[in-house]
Amino acid sequence: MTDDFQSDECSTPFNADANCRPKENCSSRDSSARDWATQWLVALPVYNEVDYVDEVLDQVLMHAGRILVIDDGSSDGTSEKLRARQAEDPKRISVIHHGKNRGYGAALQSAFKYTLEHDFAGVVTLDCDGQHQPHRIPRFIEAAKSADIVSGSRYLKKYEGDDEPPQERMFINRRITADINERLGFSLTDAFCGFKAYRSNALKAMQITDEGYAMPLELWVQAAAAGLSVMEVPVPLIYLDLDRSFGGSLDHAETRLKYYNQVLDDALDTVREQGRLPETLAKKINPA
Image (cartoon, rainbow, N blue to C red):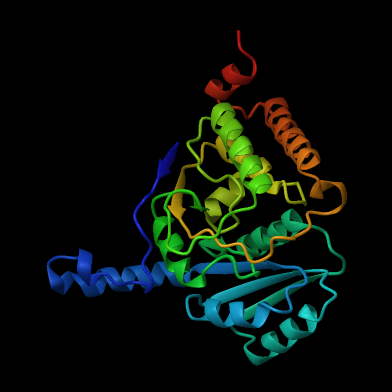
């Protein structure tokens, strides 16, 4: 169900010449790739990113035709900046404002709904805190020709200049990723990376309800239950905000790990009750 795609990404959107022979066929392939890319939306969930939002938007605009920003109740001036940017380029930039901070999962749910309502072929999601590099967007869109979900991984490849992740975050990521692989039959290396591409058929097949940071765990359960294909692509390991808060008690590592495990258990219970567990997963969860 899962392919680990280990080659590097292209920094330019559609350089087909190097891989297309004979040369006269390259223009048609290049045109096809561009047509595919124009059908995609790029979505950025944002909460209090006043220091990064302008620069990230400038970079994303270089690699995306349509951008949706989900302002999840920002109170630091981000909302005002987004209104100004939308007014400057209304054909390319759309903004959804949540009246209050609802959570990372809620922001992505708004992005998924918008993607389907506006008939995009899919959506690329990336964070607006400078940790994801927008020039990699075309690689995700291209990879989505071969998979329902393309997920970034910070552990597939070592990049020069990679940051050292906070030890507790890396421990939790590895622990939860291993658990997901064992319970769902995936071969993931990074369960939490927010840099992803989703085909619209994948969004239609999943029922995402979690509104918080644990939303990716529900997503993997839903993907497994729907039999979706998954591909990982490598991305650099960048940490700019080592003091990011997960909210209240979730800032405590043990509490956060316990919460993530509970979300995973609940998501599995939900698809089991709905009769949506593939037989192989049902045997793992309910061994004879």
